[in-house]
Amino acid sequence: MNYNRLRWLFCICLALVLCAPAVSASTNAYHMEALGEFAATIAMDEIDFDYGDSDVVVLTDAGRVVVDGQTTEKVISGITKVSGLQNGDSTLFQINRADWKDLWFYFYNRDTGKGLYLVPKEGYFRLTDAAVESLPPENAFSTIEVVSGDIYQMLEDTNAGNKTQEVLGADAFSLLSLANAWAYGAPYDLMNAASLHNHFCPGVSSGYILAKYVEENMPLTDETSYVVVSCPTWCKEDIYNVLWDMTPGKGGVDTSAVFTNEDQTYLTEKYGIRPAGIFVLWNSQENSGKGIALGFRFDDSEWTGPSWGSKIYQTVDMVQNLNNPGDYVEVMEEFTVDADLLAELENPLNNPYEVVGMMD
Image (tube, rainbow, N blue to C red; front, top):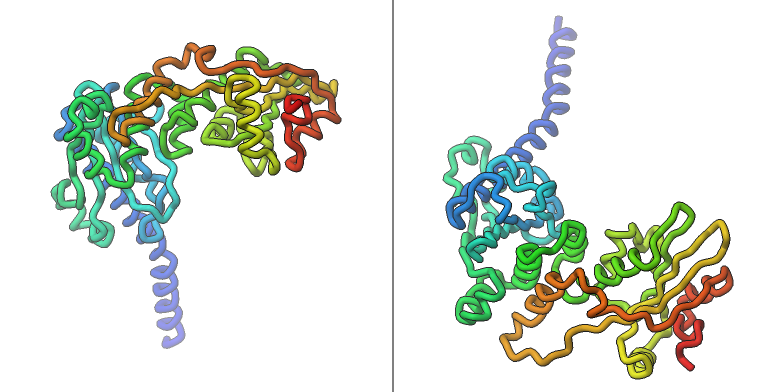
């Protein structure tokens, strides 16, 4: 009799132990989804938009950051459930951040130029399910701020622009550059690449323009692939990760360890344009390919506005001019590539421009 009783007690305890993780995970997921719903509810009221409004975008690092050991992807479900904003409609983008960073939301209405910045309270994640269920949405956040977010409006009223910078703090450039690029026509694939890069800038835009130039002038076939010898390096490299699936782990983008600033200056003076890299269309079956060295020309006109506006303004200008790559890109040299030359170009101990005779 005692043995049977002990056996039943053991079974009950075991069941409780096995069920505990599932209950905990469910609770955390509920908190996250509810937080997304709260954020969307406040945003729809504060910056005045309806369900699925195509003139509104939400940027968030939900799904990237981790809070108290819990991943945050369910926040996205909550946002979409209430607001209708979603990645498939280009109205929701998850911005890359290190997983220990703070969670935040930025809703932006391009029709009015108003943005809403929200940061949740730390204590929110320790509430019980019952407390979350009865919580007024605004009580979930430590920061709820409506700001002027359109770059042209901010430059026209620099006091409002300065206030926006103050409210958004360290996230200001990231959020304003991404939201304005989206508002003024950045295509979906470019937005995805910039989201990985975690901000928009002329460097990212230049990578997109270079990639599209190469795709148009050296189109791929079933037998070919791209090889990029990227030097000098700048933000453009993150474009190739997304558009061409080139990553440090899988390869495809090579750099030089010996290319110097003096080399860059020499090439810029010789060709009248800043070098941006060597692009090879490689046929692995024939062991041959075509290479082009491309230069990129940034707008170097003097900026007279506030310091926070320069890169955002230039980014928006480039986004609106994506269909005119000739304004930026120029072929410096063209050459035929064989297996030996490709190996020399990819060797990080070589200056690739010297390999193809451009340093003479």
